[in-house]
Length: 197
Image 1 (cartoon, helix red, strand yellow):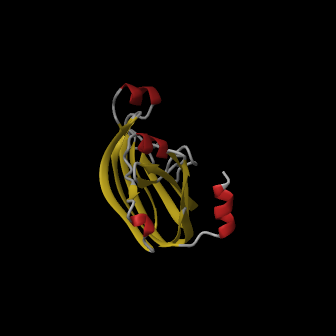
Image 2 (cartoon, one colour; image 1 turned 90 degrees about the vertical axis):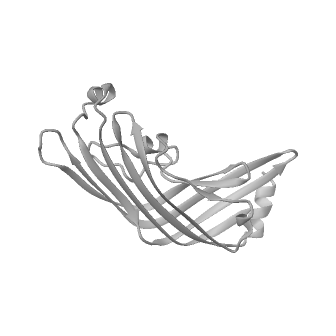
Image 3 (cartoon, helix red, strand yellow; image 1 turned 45 degrees about the horizontal axis):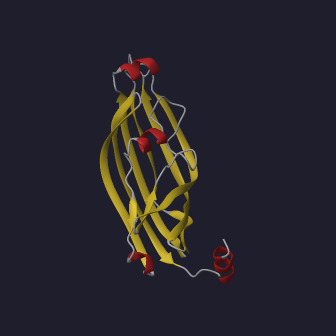
């Protein structure tokens, strides 16, 4: 089992979007809408990430999880067609659930997985959701290589700008994230529990 304490982290996400003008856009009634969504945090209260590899004969079972406790802000500004007043909303968030899984010999860390929880960029305005961006693969992953698993200190960083097209919306996502982690020891009782699974 590998476990890390999150010593610091930062995240910045800027989404620009508009209705794509196609049949899905007309059916959803979002043609002419456009706007931006910003989400992020510059520091954290605490966080952790765990990866459990259980060897069962010729198979390896993986259990993994991660979370960050922070004070983040989501700001949405959406302009309707025809030049009417914009829809604006701001919302505070206090946790980011990380999607962690083993892919080959590496560990993949992802953000805003809609299977885990309701994503942080959602608002009451007309806009794409976290699920839209996730399914369009607009958000990057962080990767931990097999050699990095044994390091005492680990920094993961990613910065991308990607287009997306999902449902009735199209746009672009600029995303940056950095995680600083420190390897921690696993309590013996937890190791005994996991070995009995």
